[in-house]
Each structure stands twice: as C-alpha cells, then as structure tokens.
Image (cartoon, rainbow, N blue to C red):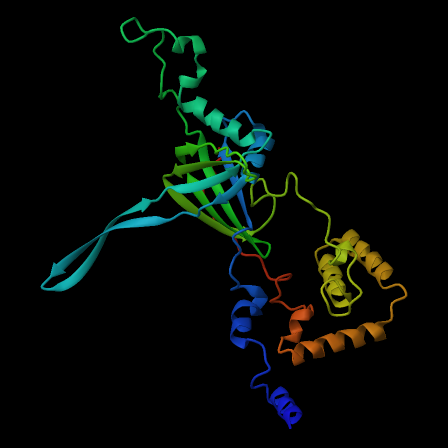
Length: 333
C-alpha cells in the first residue's frame, strides 16, 4: 500500500519535485538572477607615483583580503505643509570604504603605503639625527615637515573594484581616493593568524561599469600568478567520458561549434583530438545506461535531473551574449 502511494506521488509530482520557484528564479536563463559570490572579485589601484611598477601595482590589488563596496548617505529633511509630510533631499555623502590587505612577505602592500606616505607627508624623508636635535627654541633646521602641498596630482587616480560572475564583471570605480586611515597589523604571541594591513579611503564620486571579462576591460586581471590550465572537466582540458554531462560529448560538440563560428580553427581541432582520445574504447551504450540510471536516481530523491547535464541553448551561460560596458572617462591620461 505504501509502495503504491509512493508511486502515485512520483507520478503526480505533488511532493517529489525540485524547488521549482528557486530553480526558475536562480538557475533558469543562464543563472542571470543568481546571487553574486563575495569571494569572487578583483581590485586594481590606479597610480603613476608608486615605485612598485606595473607588476607590483597589480600584485597589490591581488593582496586585497576584503574590500567593502561603496555606500551612500543622503541629506534628507522632512517638512510639513498643512500637516502633509514633504521629503526633500539636498546632498549625497560618500561613506568611507574599508580595505583589508594581506601583509605579504615581499612587502608589496607596505611599499605601496610608503610611497603614498612619502608623496604627501615629509616626516619620513628626514635624517633620524634631525629628530634628536632641539628645535623648540632654536632656528628651524628645515621648513619641510608634515603634509606637503607640493603634490600637484592625486597619488591614486582611482581604485577599481570588480565583482566577477559568469564571465562578466560589475565595476565600481572610486574617483580620486584619499587614505583617511591606515593601520598595520598586530602581532600576538601564540597566534597563527596571518598579519593584515587595513585602510580607509574617502573619494569624490563613484563610476559604474559592467561587461564581459577580458584583459582590456578588467585592469590587471589574469596577467600574473593565475592558473590558465584548462580544467580537466572541460573540453579543452580533456573532458569527461559522458554524453550529456559537463565536459562530455554534447558539451564538446557545442564548444567546437562555437570555436568554428568564431574562427578559432586550431582550438576546435585541438578539442576534437582531445575528445577522440578521451572516448577511445568507450562504450556509448554503457555510458548512456549509467547516465539514465543516475538521472532516475535524482528523480527518486526529489532532485532536478537536468542539473546533471549540459544543455546548450542561447540562454546558457556559456553562450549568453556579453553585456555592453558602460562608458566612462579614461582615468589614466
């Protein structure tokens, strides 16, 4: 009797089914409404006055352990006109943004801070002997102490924060940021926690942009220290012995077709050779039987069996058209 009830529920789908609302919202349409992950980001510091050079500047962005996205506060007043409330806004305030760095052993982040420190403040450039000499009631040994007004241009032209998702980026650019607080880390006996640097910056405004990730759109991304080796689960990395699964036969055919359409003949040929090697001696009958059994098991467990397979379509994340980047003035000229 209980078996018949189970089969009836399986047939009608009243209880054994996936979370259709969540699937249609967060998965369908190439996962376009899926929430972004906090760990997927990239930061680039735009400056011409650091001694680190182009490579060091990119590495400084890679040492960002955490970064807060911009937040705003508006000046709003409430008025009463014949007992009816009227809301009036008069100003937008840009709240400071906090950035936390790893204290790296190459002192990349410390050098970036020291370059900034020297650029604006002259205390660090004097010989230590000057700090030992009396100065309260004697002639000044030098005029240059504290903040220097000789800095004609901002040290940082911009700090670019990129959210990365589905081969796309969402960019927040902080214009003319000024460091308002910088803190080196703390050493604690018996602790194994890594040391950090922390800083807060204020800025003049925020520019927004979005588009498809490339070395031209996301500054400094994938230029150093990134692993460019294709995953073994992808057609370029060898693929999997599957028909409809990720990296399987259907995925490989779709990828090769995309390469041919884009003129990448060499890439298409390479993936074809890798697929032929991968499926050498394989039994397609046994593979199909195994995948059917796995999909049936998903149904019995109330899971969506389509999530196990790669289904090419014009809404899939692999083939979805890239968004157009928002235009903003170039800041590096």
